Amino acid sequence: MNLGKRSIFLALAALVMALAAPLPGADRKAAGSPATPKSVPAKPKPASKPPRAIPLEPVKPVKPIKPASLARDPYLGAIVVDAADGRVLFEERADEKGYPASVLKLMLLLVALEQIDAGKLSLQDDVTVSASAVTREGADLQLKEGEVFKVEDMMYAVMIHSANDVATALAEKLGGSLAGYLEIINRRAQELGMVNSRFVSANGLGPAVPGDPYDVTTPRDLSLLCREIVKHPGALRFTSTQEKMFSPAGGARKIKMETHNYILDTVKGCDGLKTGFIRAAGYCIAGTAQRKGRRVIAVLLGAPSEKARNKTVARLIDQGFATL
Image 1 (cartoon, rainbow, N blue to C red):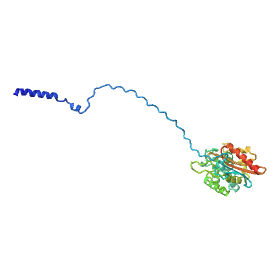
Image 2: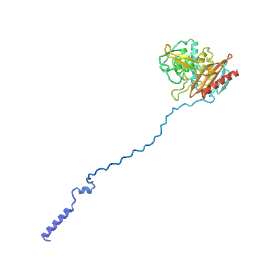
Image 3: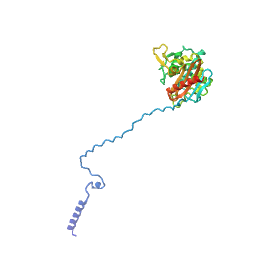
Image 4: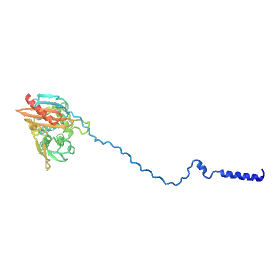
């Protein structure tokens, strides 16, 4: 090839190579780098549907756990005795252990009467209500800390109205403290032969803390307590009174108290003694009546209702007199 033709050939080859060379940035495109997108107006997103509401189950209120009741039909246990000599006129499950509820307040009456007889206490002594005696549990007379009452008025309040706050205040007076009072009544119970009884409160309300012990006794044990009470001539005026006014010493506040012992009106010769109820115990009563110079005491624990309790104890008292 002559020089002219060679020069033309080289020139053409250089032109072909130049045309075949990649444009600037083509290597980046080949490597996968995205190209600069053109400006395209964004399409509006469709409105999202609200989430479907899932119906919630109604929240059921949580009921407090209540203790099981010892009540049976017609009662947990019962006994009828001759007050004069303790002779048993009727008994059925008389040694069955139960809870006395407010019948326990008969211990307050006995200890107060015995301290009065011993000259350690007077009906006109003052009782100042402590902070620990103030309560709103069950029956109460809305005592206020620092109020002052006479022993006599408190004894009526415990027997007529079954006032739990009054019971605690009077117990603290009798024992110097609640613990001192409990020591007195448990010792006195053993002296009376109440071998199946153990007391942990002044009012029989049952424990404030679940799992703590209840006051425990039996119909037979309570009959021993009742026989001791009726030996005191002044006892029955507290247990037979059906209504009375209650007020603090020198205070303007007055409360009308009415008895819970409805057999006082319905049973011939009835003049006491004490009723009681808490759910765990059922309906309880220690009743007594006197006819033609003879006295009968009937004790019943764990009846299923107030009506059943009153009807049954009335029948037992009549049955006791028939046996005499």
